[in-house]
Image (cartoon, rainbow over all chains, first blue to last red):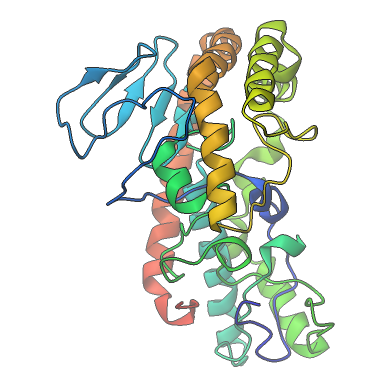
Length: 132
Length: 208
């Protein structure tokens, strides 16, 4: 289990999106990879680390040197992170921004609680995101 | 950005399979799954071990939560509760895209491919596979994820679905371009303020 439950006084407010985020496919960037291809499949497009020039893959996608391809519809695929940016994502709050807001809200709560005499170091609480 | 169509990147699948990877600076690199999601300073009324907070402490926390300094970063406040018409219409696309015939055709091709290579589609999750585990990056999970990725490459799963969703979003984005631009500007401002608050209060934040 994560390091949590340090002592009484945990914040009660559950993070609204935690349950949704727990099932989201959010993946971190990775590098220094040596992809293998299972039998029966075509080779993937060129690795961004091995070929810095934009190049079309077998499926007609043009990957930039950063491993990003922009579709005609405006959607953007990022092979290094596995993320897909849909056109609406340019306007909506991103997952990272939601996290920043959540943390800032909690920081504001903690700062306020400290002014009220609470030992905020002792109420630190890391939620189990999978518990919602 | 997100991954709305499941695992599709060979580079990512090689390392994380279907698992949620480390995306939070407070967490050590390499953590995935249960410990791999970002957390900060929020909590639950009762922890997984049955722990409950001290009522007096909780009262202080609750009062502070209602202060304006905290509420201005509340997601419901920032998003106006999600009631804007453009958000409603975008949500309709997001809820409904799996019912579009062109999307169903892509999923059917993917499922057929997956069966051909000896795996089974996940009946509850488009673009998934039976037996997939979001919490594990074990070798069997990586092997399964690579089968999934191979099929998605074969049927052009992600670019085709991304185009489907984008096509249905387009009229909404065009109709509400002004509102969306204004919303984005507001989000930029509040996020900038949030980052300043985090910097000023770094000592009260959890450090992984």
